[in-house]
Length: 196
Image 1 (cartoon, helix red, strand yellow):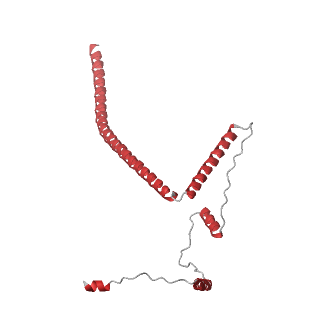
Image 2 (image 1 turned 60 degrees about the vertical axis):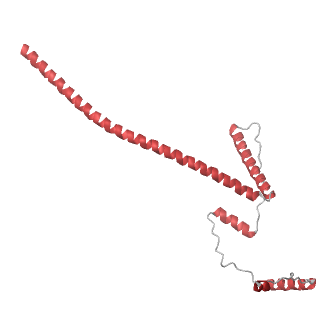
Image 3 (image 1 turned 90 degrees about the vertical axis):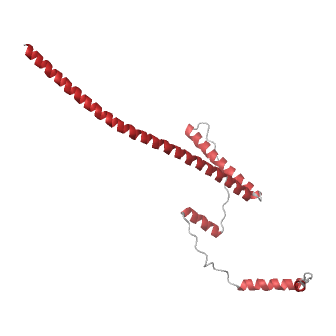
């Protein structure tokens, strides 16, 4: 036990007083060295491949440092003598402008709230659970529909076999009836010839 106690060191932390001139000198040396160093080329980073021309144009804008300025969509009111189609088109443009403004305000709210990212994650998780629940319901309904279709198919196959048997019996009975009619007609003709 004495060995363990002797290995423990009990001391206060060591703190140097910082001289402002030394700190400035160290920062100047670091800055000088950073200027002499070549900027990393990024050869180990694979080249970005864009799937669409639109993505390629957007990437080139970002690399060039160009930022998009928001242009609020303007809605022109048609004249009072405008046709119904022109009014429908104006309503369509107004809905588009409203949706753009709604999305813009949502984005501004997200930028304003530091916890917005977590809220979006929670919202997306809820939506994911809802989607999964709907997929489960859909799968269950599809299974029920498939079971019903299989039962109908089996019933129709069985009924089809019965219909074939009944059709054969019907054709046999029709043939017998024709034979009977021809036999009766022959007997009647024989009777009529024998009576004369």
